Length: 583
Image (cartoon, rainbow, N blue to C red):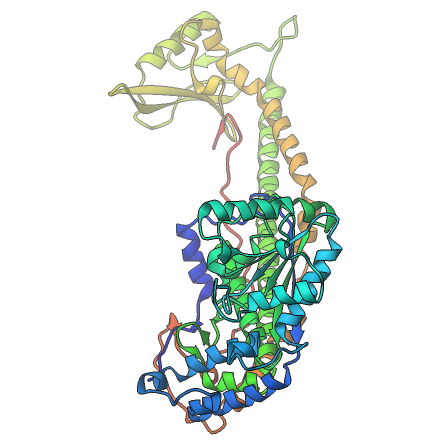
């Protein structure tokens, strides 16, 4: 019985936007954690003759379901339903070591254990002066006390016999069953008295702070989830790694061992693509509109056609994973570029609009101040006279005028309409009544202004309540304040214009890798067609149900990601009046 799962997802940017509405995601880089960089090394290994032979038998088993060819009893009815899961499990064990299949297989100098032992010894001697430490991970072939052959013990044997490393400096996390014992071996790693520590993802991947001298992480197999791989790497790529910081260029080498014609490389590339998508999804930097999660699954094994293609040595699927990884990276880079350019264009439009608005304010205020200066008169001391006239006051002295203004302030109510009450140097004097609630009481506040191209106010339009002379000079002071407001807007324009050249240069730039991305997408389309044709040879076509938001599709049904042309959105800018001036 074939099981189905979600593999192919569309409308990913919308999903990322929704995710970021409900989460606040920060990476170690975002918060400035001081930790070493990860230097990933994919160490390819040619299959041994025994592995070459077993790969052919695996392909025959996948086609026919004949389990006897693998040296095991025929499949039961229940096992028949999980044939591809069994095939995937055998392929993983075969890639690690043939003795995982059967104990009568012999050691080989080119198997994964031999390669790993050689690499561990090289790092051991390279950082011997600093007592550099290493982590070795595998979820298959783990050490069990009193058990038969296992990969951990085999690598340790090679390190002791072939490379003469001290046995007491090579330990397995499974040897330490209590928390107290685990803390001791962690302390020994940090001290450098234990130099190599083996473990599985579950036992060594979390809660182990033994990073102080870590220089390398070795992955004998690849876990199923990106988070598990991140936990493994996090044992060394971690704050507090002093040896890496001071003696290894602040880098930790992460070595992934992959046997050719096995699932190793495909699984690692698939896991890496998943992690890239997850990171971009969480950070909101997703550029691709689609995600293909791949054919390999922990619960159901692997798709038959893709399984056969990989074991036959067909590198198309690996090339596809690498292409998708490059495309995802470039699309993320392109999205960041256009996001930055759009943001610069928005700022440029806003600044240009502000400068134009400010120039309009300056011109209109200069016009009003020129009108005032042409009519204004001064006394013998050079101070401006205040020939204020109020419609309801026959007196012309400032004290009487001030008292009348104070009375109007207390008693007048224009009910929201601006009312003319006098004149100064040809400019109308007006008042506007506004309602306000204070301590539960509705009160009326009057705002006084000089009307020109704008409403010029002094003391925010409030009349001095106790000083009649100050009240009478309110409007003269408002007109005299115009040059200071003009100067402020001139300074604002000078400040804004400083950023114009840089923003204009950014807005005029084009992303230089568009052609490269287009070529890679073209290659992916052609590769998909080739893969689809290969996988469909002799296979009946099936149509599976799909929905708009998530689909379960076969390779021949997968839609191709569309190249998107970024849209520049220019928001409308609100015009604002100058400070102390009302439009």
